[in-house]
Amino acid sequence: MNIVDSLYKLWQSTGIANFIQPADPTITSGFEQFLHQFGSPIMILLCLFLLWLGIKKEFEPLLLVPIAFGGLLSNIPVAGIADPNGFLGIIYEAGIHKGLFPLIIFMGVGAMTDFGPLIANPKTALLGGAAQFGIFGALLLALCCFGFTLPQSGAIGIIGGADGPTSIYVTSKLAPELLGAIAVAAYSYMALVPVIQPPIMKALTTEEERKIEMKQLREVSKREKIVFPLVVLGLCIIFLPDACPLVGALTFGNLCKECGVVERLSDTMQNALINIVTIFLGLSVGSKLSASQFLTTQTLFILILGVLAFSFATAGGVVFAKVMNLFSKEKINPLIGSAGVSAVPMAARVSNKVGLEANSQNYLLMHAMGPNVAGVIGSAVAAGILLALCN
Image 1 (cartoon, helix red, strand yellow):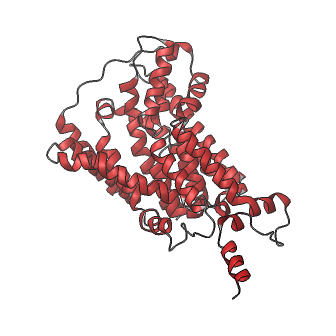
Image 2: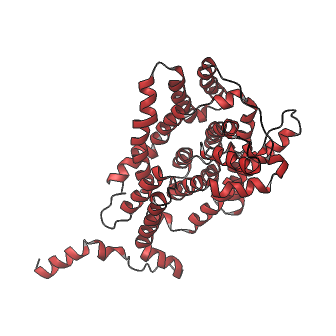
Image 3: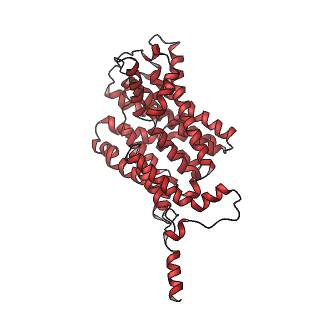
């Protein structure tokens, strides 16, 4: 091999020579041809934008930053970092494809969650259930109007639960080819809760309804808090075993928090363990942001359906709260129904903020936490239903 051939081979191994792909004669669409040739540079720019959102705007930075960086790594030409035998490919196979990382994160969520407001006012669990309407509404739209398969529609619908780990878990089981788009949509809309929800909440309620004040919640005993996760798990075992991986992880974390005898385990789940797994989960999800998987018309449809699912979920909780008021002596402020989505505690804070705008003495945060934590359980139950229906 002469020096010219050696230099040419060296040139061919560089990123510069491989960023732009040669034209594919089998692709007839000019736009698709453009995406094929310039996909990697486009995705790198998109990942840099996601990094900017996470760092500058603080949009779910704990996950958006590693997801975006994983996307950068997956679009480096030649390196093969996201290939099955690459660094990110190995992490993805172990943690996402097998469903391990979302379950560990659910343990941490359980260890950080106080179910006291839900126990003190059990009827708010209905609001968490009503908010899951967005999941099944988006499923039907994806299936009937956008041409997705039933498993793909189920994976898209779960975005309406506003729960990133649940979305990742369900998608990895039903439609792993859509994981990158669904993960980005789920976490983006979770970060945009303060933007998306208030207009919907105000459109569906009157000024008088937003001013409704609710009584202070009763104090919940330690015994009730210990028994609650066991009861939830027991009901799940009886009625919906498919949801037990998620619900079991959640209730185990919560039991460790509330029992008071395993503080070290609870502290580990709340801090070190969930932080370590969040890093690996974000990077491995980012590995699915390669140009060939992300730059498709399917991705655009997923983003549209995702925001519709989230909007339907918000509206479902608010409207059901208004229905409950027709049959209840003690009125519920309908604003807390919007917290039935699983974005804890951001959705509850948004309910409180909008309530204070209508009535400066109207503190709804603890009342909104009831449907909010019910939404966590509800999204896990919905995930179990989808796995049973769509697998």
